[in-house]
Length: 244
Image (tube, rainbow, N blue to C red; front, side, top):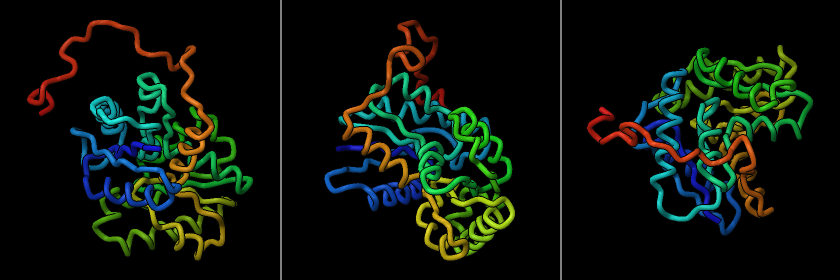
């Protein structure tokens, strides 16, 4: 089985980290193929960057010529999953939805701990659209920028752990979801501080994708995710120069 794990930003070191986390939980025989978009922002922290990332991720997957069995979109609260599902018949798993869905097997309510406060509405919207918001106790921001997770790991861990503790103590969350692909690997510290289960979106998405593939299931093409209709596109795909 081969899974494409697509980072939504263009930071190669984060793609490597996400790929390593995915590989660590993958079952024997599952190959993880990390992908970085060819264009877009170094980190995705708002609507403009998220919509651009959606296009970049779709184009990265369309350009990949080797066979694969499922795609994981490794960005929390980002746009684009629906477009990928139109383009592909293999399962497409978004880490936001995979984490929240998994959390609901583990407790009555869950909270998401993410990066900047401006990311909170994007995550709330994604959970609502996916039908997963009813049992979400809160979406909390640690105040960190995405790239701070690499620049100052010690401070990042402390901020995330403390915000997770507030979610458990003040919001009555029973499960914590790590709300950024770059937070992979922080689960143990949060468990130590809070005593509740912690769901990493990348890890959850890998196991969900593997299960769908093993069950022989594919994306429905009856209505919502039917393939795009054939039509003419003006100046698309753009030339390399047009991307600048």
